[in-house]
Amino acid sequence: MYQVPREVLEIAEDIKTMKIRGAGKIARSVARALRIAAERYRGSGEEFKEYMEHVARILLNTRPTAVSLPNAVMFVMNRLRNSTGSLEELRRIVIESANEFIEKSLEAVKKIAEYGARMISDGDVIVTHCHSSVAVSVIVEAHRQGKKIKVFSDETRPKFQGRITSTQLAEAGVDVTIVPDSAMRLIVKKADKVIVGADAIASNGALVNKIGTSQLALAAHEADVMFLVAAETYKFSPMTLVGELVKIELRDPTEVVSKEWLENNPGIRVLNPAFDVTPPEYIDAIITERGVIPPHAAVLILSESFGWAMREYIMKGLEESEE
Ligand code: RUB
Image 1 (cartoon, rainbow, N blue to C red):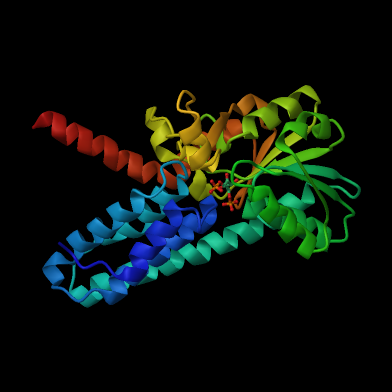
Image 2 (cartoon, rainbow, N blue to C red):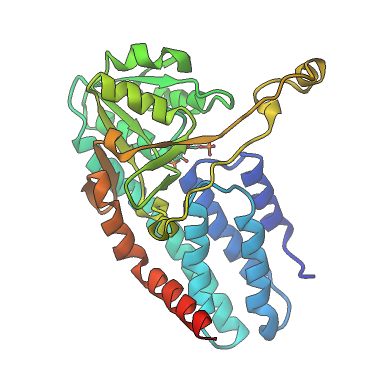
């Protein structure tokens, strides 16, 4: 079997255990891992592509929901799959593609912060959920522009990502209050806007994000509060164009209750879904680096970004059916 660099395996493990978390960071870390794998490869030219496929599989098997992960792998690996040349040429293609993905991703976050901040008004009360680095960037940018805003961040049990959000906002000087998840319906009634991030956007504009997002969207809908999603276009899921559903990750029960509690209560099962789906009807707009779109325009982003992949997928299917 192939010798995979320790650092690459560590990145995969850190994604699994959520030391590296959040869809954007996961995608950039995966691109970095592919780059490291290519840089450190010491085998033959003939085996390089197969070795890289092996590394890609390791990375793909870490967390199932954030579509940014397979999209980052596809961005790098597709260029490699479609290239021929010496080992050094192929290695360079992987390194350059990975760097390009990381650069584009960081640029996208900056653009979204700029577009999103325009949608925030002076005096706004904003609610957010979990920790989305993009949603935080939008809020921080609006604050930097001198808009006086107040933010409510929920705890986001069981992993408490809301604490990361609150810490980052407080460090940036934003007025932030942390509240229990169960207080959100009460809190959202006092808000002007809700802003959350995305792990995946389906072709019909549905949002897959941290568990509890759909409940918050429902409460915002009821209270007539604007519900915004901040998402780079590499979080849009091409496979939903052909009807595939985004897989919802089920995590370990011990994130919810202790191992000891579980052992003492053998008759009780614990379910720990990490994400949920918010229907497009509850979303007012998705802020992307290409502009602000209504959720139903997600299919246009997908056909622009991944039309080529769909063509390849369909052609492959046709070829196979002819065989
Ligand atoms: C994180 C989460 C975030 C999105 C977007 O879930 O749901 O809202 O990933 O994050 P987890 P970002 O903590 O389980 O990874 O905007 O940083 O890409």
